[in-house]
Structure formats: structure tokens, C-alpha cells
Length: 111
Image (cartoon, rainbow, N blue to C red):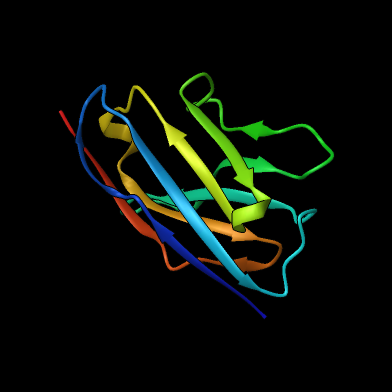
């Protein structure tokens, strides 16, 4: 079993920045496939960024150049640095590690 706890969401103005964190515990490995996803009201959950560890990092076109996924294996934590935020980035953000999901954290970008 793997437990994931997200933090760092909140309300920010257009153009601002936030950093999301996802702390993992349980049966984890530094080589785990990890990713960030988001779901806006009335929309399907979508991929934001993925780090397959050993492969190329993948970003949604809508966030390329603005968001960065990273991980600190010593802290069992993955991050999503979000810069130049836009109102359309408003959503609940979820972290994923292998087949396990966090509970989600709300990000709201005001115009």
C-alpha cells in the first residue's frame, strides 16, 4: 500500500506561482512512475505532468514552459512548481504514484 498526501494548493492571482507537494509513504521506490493530474468542474481528469523515471518527462501542452515536475527521493516527495498561473489552471490537482492517488488539493487562480 502507498499513501499520498498533497499540500500547497490555494488561491492565487493570475500570473502568480504555487508549488504543490505530494508526500508518499508505504511501499514506494525511487524508480516509481509519478505524475500530476487535474480536474476542473464539469471536465474529465487530465494529465498535467508525468515523470516516468528513466524516460522523458511529459507535460500537457497547456502547461509547457510554466509548470515543472520534480521529486526528492530522500524526502519521498514529488513537487509541481506552477508559474505564470492562469484562470484556466483552476482545478483540483491530484498526484499519482504508480496506481495510487492522493486526495487532491484545490488550486484557484483569480483573474
